[in-house]
Image (cartoon, rainbow, N blue to C red; front, top):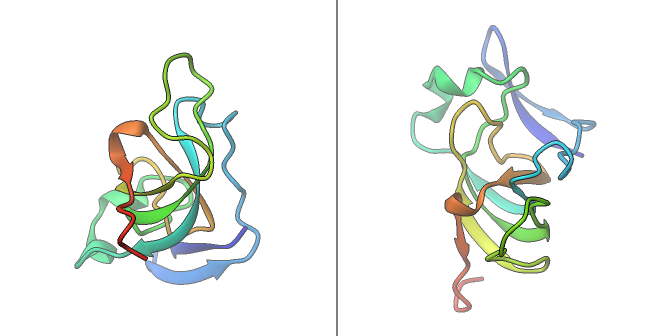
Length: 116
């Protein structure tokens, strides 16, 4: 899977063509989402927080399609195939500038039908 990486210590951006793909086993309380778009917030590349993960991926805003639901018990607001958008937080997680990402239910919303 491809991912945009913000490399330490120089904070250089580069494309990693073989970044590990997240799975529900890694994040059982999160949705797995195929990223269709990710956005870098103004000044994001200067924030210190995104460097917390071992491999920092920027782009905390995203739009995409649910490919897998959390494996934890309870009702799920979104099913595979649902188009969503959202913001991932906290910064200890990777961002969304990658082909497959993870997000918890609190951070995602149903994409309006009139948006492409």
